Length: 108
Image 1 (cartoon, rainbow, N blue to C red):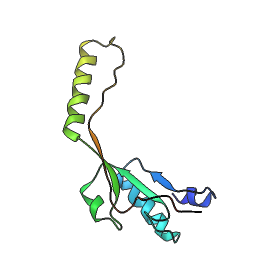
Image 2 (spheres, rainbow, N blue to C red):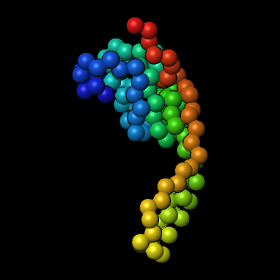
Image 3 (cartoon, rainbow, N blue to C red):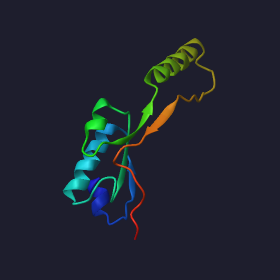
């Protein structure tokens, strides 16, 4: 996040690989004097329990963890049974949990 801020790029939003990385982005934004959710939107991924208690509460993508585990296990068992099967794509339910770190892009 610090490298992005120092790059001179005009950021309006950042999507992080995980809620943990998003918490670091929130810290870097505050250290730079920016307001997460107002100056730059930040979205995490995982919906960790702590996400709702971050300052400000983190917008995140919540996935159905049991469905993800089941889908992964099913694909693994198919691959073990027949290593030559073609690659498969599967989807699991996901939900955007909107909290205070997201909002409209700031006006110029």
